[in-house]
Image 1 (cartoon, one colour):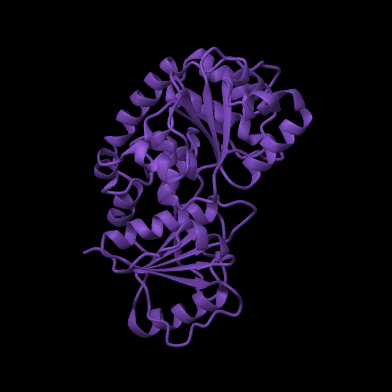
Image 2 (cartoon, one colour):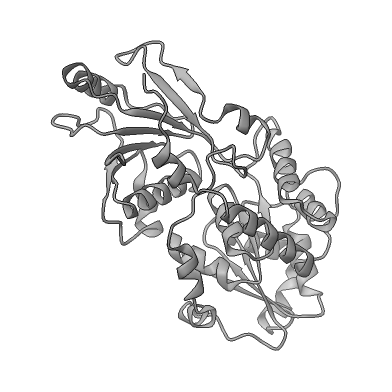
Length: 365
């Protein structure tokens, strides 16, 4: 029997990846008949990320103390990305457990990684050592790229939506001019990549024209800063020669998918958009979230190995992420596209994250 009510807890750190993943997870669960309470400490991004909301998903502001009186007990608790469930929630539910014998499944949902430790740690228990739930078990659940991990978020209707997608109509709806002869479309969702100025110079000097679709926020700020520092680059943009730039508004998650589907190459950042770029099946480059101890270097290399990335794509990733002294090679969309298609084909054959979560049946403690 499928657990019918889930509580998902999310703390927004400093970007939109955490809430982005948690919203997609919540909406996907709801589409499969689950009632979800999504507790988030900063829900503001949902106003543009998911303006229509989702039937079956109730967003609750995670601000202490939680209003837990008369809270209907749930079947599954999810701590996303290392957050800790509010103690008053645990205490209230501990009362239900002692009164009714209810033992919800307690999942610690981890970050996505292609590193080998993920297979070792996926589905391992973790004993709760103090507090009102002392003696209970949590279970680590790792998203990943192999059959020995929790898989990736992938909605059941994604393939159908992609098949029905009209790229030209969507681009026109966003005010993007029709393609010039031979023009390629590249989307840009990034932090502040060290090689951004080099990419702009490369595209401005390329033989074929490029339309760069720049997402709102840090990507727009990064490009505009690069242009200020490279004033000579601005002339061709305004003359619509070689490189044209369109700044996009804040896009809902659904329209962000459309952006990736409509582009010939996607430069993405973080965890959620990496997965979406994989499902888009187009050539893509990933800017990984930088960590202070450089742990992201190994994480990036592990992903490139898992993707069986060709040499030019590896070099581009290293330069784009500021690893070593690599110079930025030119876009090689044909080779990168083949790699992206092979990766997508392999991953789409694996059970998705929500399917695996719904089927997860450890012995609860």
